Length: 52
Ligand SMILES: [Zn+2]
Image (cartoon, rainbow, N blue to C red; front, top):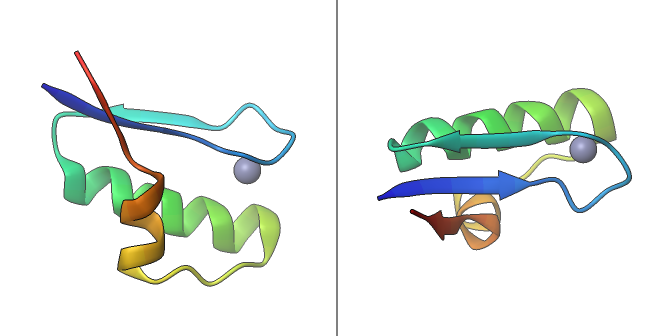
């Protein structure tokens, strides 16, 4: 099983990995760099979807 996040903003960001922690870290980095948003781990985890 893999985990993925697609950015809800109007951009092309998408991360998919079998490591949920890696996905969360990339989402937090993307949100900070591109959207000037500081997400908590819980905020980022809420965005994670399970993918096959
Ligand atoms: Zn984005």
